[in-house]
Image 1 (cartoon, rainbow, N blue to C red):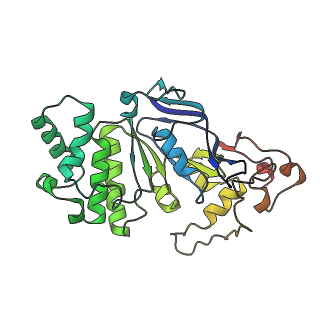
Image 2 (image 1 turned 120 degrees about the vertical axis):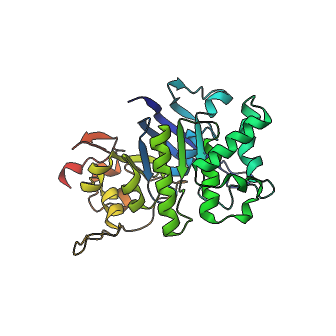
Image 3 (image 1 turned 90 degrees about the vertical axis):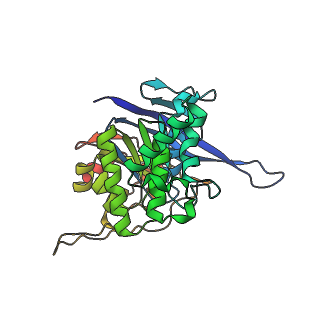
Length: 320
């Protein structure tokens, strides 16, 4: 297997201004995330809103340069100190959540799909038009629709257009930020089937960001659970769904509907709300909501360690 993406201790933070004469607070949205991904594999990133999933997506696609850590794309290290090279950006592309907001309503589909080629290649007008026609056919759209505008398409068709646009420069990595959450169930299945076919045909690596665990279970090879800007559990999909070990992962997965007739799953209800990023708690970030919290949990921030074929950031996982 060829490694196409590697992140080592990625960090990202923002300044939150309080007032004219007050010192701004630091919000650490991403706090030491590490993983690797091979061609043809899918890593799903799950967690509550505000856990850092979208910040991770923007960092991986170089929309925002990581503040610290190392990022490798297709074997080449990204220089986070300077503006990344344009050719490096072409290796990773992104599909956004909202197909209604991610397309320019003033441009035709031909213009939108052709634009990346116009800016990054020396293809002639005829070659660009042929590439657009081929890509539209690949994602299940009729090429004669190229002269239409986004408002003439359904939500599922718009997401197909967004996927086509992401693939125009032939990237090796595609970051999918909640790509099916805004779609109807039947259309959602069609888009997931399309993504699977494209991955098999083109050898793409996916970083699939989602809160829908039923979708994650279907599409993911590996799963990384995030909480408060950190990875709290990281394992292959079969391991993490059959034996979640971190208390947060267990609570998260207990809310997943069970498809088997007669099978029941005990629901774990978390107490309280996630801590404020402006005033993070001491020790384990999950401590204030954890049913197993002990004194040393309030003093130490646990790091990922290997346990039962998974990496778990909890000092009590063996006893849970």
